[in-house]
Image 1 (cartoon, rainbow, N blue to C red):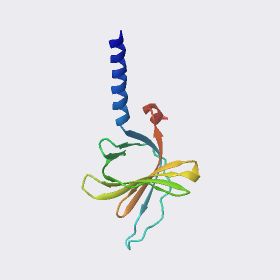
Image 2 (image 1 turned 90 degrees about the vertical axis):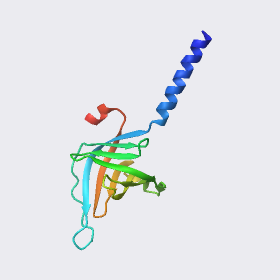
Image 3 (image 1 turned 135 degrees about the vertical axis):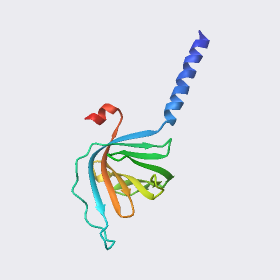
Image 4 (image 1 turned 90 degrees about the horizontal axis):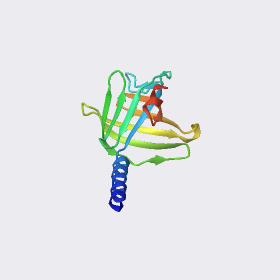
Length: 144
């Protein structure tokens, strides 16, 4: 009987360790806006916020961020930058590259003074994509 208890404890420990190392964060988008540079290199104005319902994954194990839009946006995380924090925001920046090798800075920002609203910013050379995001625990949350 003691061997059986030890085996059960061992199985739970192994499963617990495996689960704790698997870090995939899933988000659903609720809004999308874009900011573009004009022909003179100056930033324009943010577009009107559009309602969107897309899946976004932050996969720490595979070092990638994926936005499941019409055209899947796959970004490889090259470096996990230092977290920045001030009175209004917590910023989690990632140095990334796309499938063509173009460098990007992608940030997840938590707006402390806006009820801890989360946003994803994809900063490209001439365009910035902004998504309002909510973390999902269960895929059923995505369908809501």
